[in-house]
Amino acid sequence: MKQLLLLCTILAAASCSPKTFSIVQIADAQLGFDAAVKGQEPGAIYVNDLTYEKECFERAAESLRGLKPEMIVFTGDQIHRPLDQEQWDAFSELLTLLPDNAIVKHLPGNHDVLISEGKVDNTPFTSRFGEDRFVYRKGRFCIIGINSSLIKHDDPCEDEQYEWLKKTLEKTDSNCVKVIFCHHPFFVSDIDEEDGHVAIAKDKRKKYFDLFADSGVSAVYAGHLHHNAEGEYKRVKMATTTSVAYQLGEEKPSYRLIVLTRRRGESPVQDLMVPVLK
Ligand SMILES: [Fe+2]
Image (tube, rainbow, N blue to C red; front, side, top):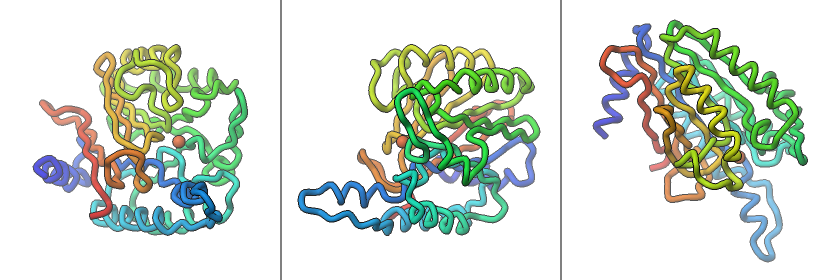
């Protein structure tokens, strides 16, 4: 609670201070996940019931209208079935509930695109949100978003994205506070952990994290796991944020509040999880 009060104080000051910047990360709203799980139960008939995820999102949006963050980043898996128009329509409707003044950015997750071996078709995402990556700079803050499915699934466009990322970081003032957002965690808790189906492959992790460390990136924020996790490599934090809705661990549906600061003596990146359901 103390940490929440501290961050809320920082946030309240953020709007009139060029030394702070507030971001909320929303991971894996994934409208339709609950229905898909229920539809797999023995004897069940699939019903595209989005009630649970919609309720979680509505609670999150209500909270954010009070919090008024400067930026909201969706780190992918906005819906469950990439070609399901009903799920996309419901998601678009929910977006209207977000506070008007926030800059809103979306990144694709594996459920927002079509994946076949070695190839990612981003069309279901890009036809709705445009680019699958972004850079946003404000004062001495730099926020970058990338499409981690290209990395996870060995898409031919991965190299082009890496070069863009490298150039973007090179062009950014070394005194800037920098954070990266993406869908897949590069690792769950240890950069040397064995390969699994959730994180980026072991043989790619250090290439990216060496770049991040050399470029002064403070933290990488991902989702995809539907539970929280954290690790660090060369002082770059790897934080995985649980879903704002459907959980696969013990956490409650939550979003992550992140405050970037350039105040002397303070950590440049502070964050905490905020539950959306009581
Ligand atoms: Fe995912």
